[in-house]
Length: 275
Image 1: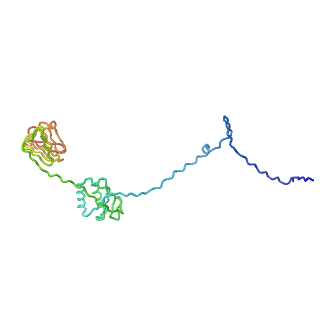
Image 2: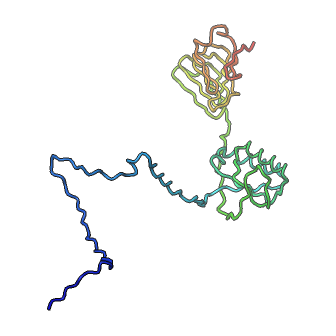
């Protein structure tokens, strides 16, 4: 006997599960165009603004220390005497402070603000550049800073200046003949006779010629602008004092054959008669 199941029209029919649909991209054959539209992007959509670029990360501010060598000066009372000693050191070595950073130790002086300003001005006038101060507790605004923690170093030896050569004079009995040269860079030269044409006298000091000067005479060769030339009869080929010279063509003839003295005045060679 067969049993027949008759569905109840009042009972809801259960929903059937949907089947998964596989989406595959199929390449179109060569020579054909795909009709599927390309997906829209933010760059191709004019209605959607582009995302702003992220700013680059900024590097952290770095503070680094440096250590340098500096020269320390310690003014001492009386200040006028200390400045005089400083001037003497600069005379021996004019470039002593060139290119150097100077630390001023005020421990022995303890100046007030006005006195310190005057001291700094005096040192600047001597080409001393102040990097900072030490030895005091406070420094007024407008001045180099106060430095702490300095450590002593070896002292600086000042260069020695060679002794100046002793000035001497020589006397030549007779005349200096043509082709002869007399060189005496440390003093005066006295010629009892004449200096012939083609002869030369070169002296660190003055030149005295008791006869005729027909050759070349150069005085003050040791950079002595106060040197002079004297002669009894003026007929030179060339004259020179310090680093200035004049030839016979520049001298003229108004003093020819006369007693003459020659000197340097205002950067020019001057000549005048002795009579």
